[in-house]
Amino acid sequence: MVIHGTPLLRDAMVPLPCSAKRASLSQQHPATVSVFASPESWIESDALAQCHQVAALDGMTHVAAMPDLHPGKGAPIGAAMASTVLYPFLVGSDIGCGIAVFPIKLKRAVPEKLAARFPDLDRALDPEQDADDPAWDVFQGEVPAGYVQGLGTVGRGNHFVELARIGTVFEPDHASRLGLAADDLVLIVHSGSRGLGEQILRAHTAVHGAGPAPDPSAYLAMHDDAVRWGSLNRRLMAARVAHALGAEPAEPLIDQCHNLVEVRDGGYLHRKGAAPGDGRDVLIAGTRGTFSYIVAAHAGPDAGHSVAHGAGRKMSRADALRRGRVKHRVEELRRTPLGSLVVCGDRQLLFEEAPTAYKRIEQVISDLVGHGLATPVATTVPLVTYKTADLGSAPPADRRRRRGRP
Image 1 (cartoon, one colour):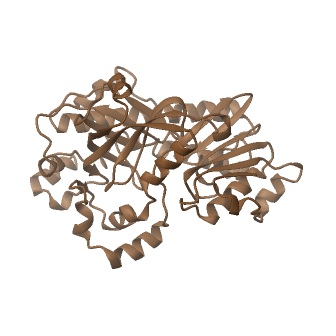
Image 2 (cartoon, one colour):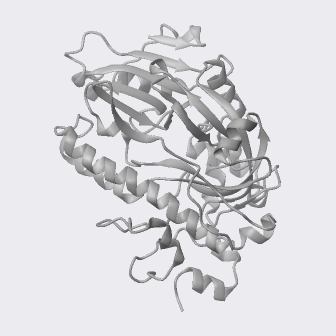
């Protein structure tokens, strides 16, 4: 095992759960584990334990943990995991989850006015009932067939749609190649395949539990559909918001998935909360009250060709809810220290997703830079962050319209 920047943890060993023990009986040499974090970074022992549990599975060759590493359901979040065996549970249920960045042109960006104009992204668009919605035009005939539940919706948890402006530009030439400059406006969309990915994982685990895919090709065919679905859904949401704000939809400047499995070097590279980092541009999300960073990623095989996907949680949702209710008032969480607004009709989610529940994005970026995995290009500064529809503050007529009622 190799721990980058955390020598005190070098000899840490953790017991495996029964399922992992059974899977690793035939493996004499567990995979290597590399953690790309500095001593200043907060890395939970439970997350490290999960990395070692994964490393002990049959066929695993290497686990690369990013500085946003934190515990997940059965597998760490913020890790790239290489194996000769395909394990669907390492990708999880939100197959295709990713972050896309779209340019948007607005005459004036007044958060208070724009927040009230965001569409209800909890309400799905129906291909038949909403056939005249102009947002469909971005698909250019690619409307997903077969699975239409949740189309045009963002979901819960840490998913969001954000109107932001470009802040500090560190690499003007690179930003210019992306078509960006300071003070430009962008839409950032973070979401995945919604119920489709969960449906795929449940079908596997119902028969095979946390075991490998018996037919990798069959799983990958469904997986690839979910990845494509997630990308198309991000485009649909960006178009819905653009139209609602009086702007024209645009093609994404960045669209990187961070929950997927990639066939690479004769094996399978599972990413769960880790963005592809081999020569690509990536937006690494901060919180709704902090900057996010656009970076040029250049991670090699030791890092699983990956970089962090965000700030990473430092509190569980239960802890964030308990502590947040003591520390914050609801209205404090609707306006951030940066002056941006949060659209969220779910009070519990406001506490669970409070900026204090996450690690410092600056430390995450510093760790990536320190390990030679990424170069910052620019920051984005939130103006309006949409989490869930806040229909309670809308006029009755608007509530009916946004719920799809006459």
